[in-house]
Length: 66
Image (cartoon, rainbow, N blue to C red):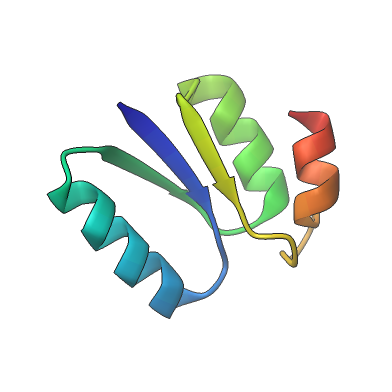
């Protein structure tokens, strides 16, 4: 299963990506809301985990666009 994690904090990315990868998931990372919207359209992940305070486009608006 493909999961996309939209997060701008490197520590959070490191921790969650490692845990999900060890559990057998394919993890895609986007570091701002705009990149997350574009990546979700292109990659079609089964699940999107979205931070709410993101640069460029916040998580609330990115989620509305998805």
